[in-house]
Image 1 (cartoon, rainbow, N blue to C red):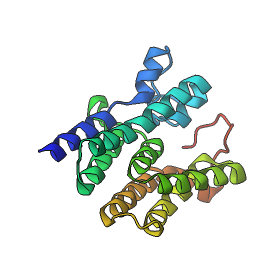
Image 2 (image 1 turned 135 degrees about the vertical axis):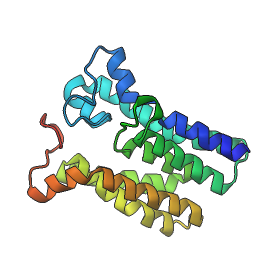
Image 3 (image 1 turned 90 degrees about the vertical axis):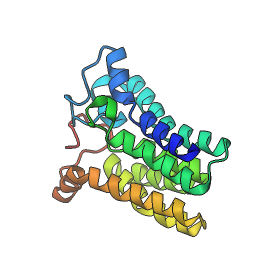
Length: 199
C-alpha cells in the first residue's frame, strides 16, 4: 500500500508542469505555444530569460528527486523507489493536470537518477557538461548523457531494478527528442545560446 501511494504521489508531483506555472506567474506566454512548444527549461530560456528558465529547471529537477528521497526516507523498497521515480518521470512527460502535454524529461530524469544513485547522477551530469562545452548543442548533450546513463548504472553495480528504470527513462527521453534527432542528422539543430527553436 505504501509503495502504491508513493507511485501515485510521484506521478502527481511529476504532473506539476513547472514551465507552465512559472510562465503564468511571470506573465510570459504558454511554453506550449512558443518556441519549440516544449514546456521545459530550454524553451523557456528562449523567450522568458534566464531567471524563468532557472526556476523551471530547478522545479523539474526537484519533482524527480523529492518523491524518490521521500519514499526512501519512509522505508520503501528498491522496486518501490524505482517505480516512484518512473512515475514522476512519466508525470512530467504526460501531466494529468495539463492535458498530458509535457516536456522531454531531461531535468526530471536527472532528479530521479540522483535519488537512486548519486554516483550515476554525477557521471551523467559530467557527460552532459562535457558535451555541452564541446559541441554546444543542448539536445545532443542530453541524448549522449541519456544513452550512457544505463551504462553508468551497470558499471556502478546498481540493483537491476534501478538500472532497468534508468534504461526505460533513457529510451523514452531519446524518443521524446526524435525531432531534435532529425535536426541533428540534417545539420540544422541550434547551438546553445541561439534563439531559433530546436524543433
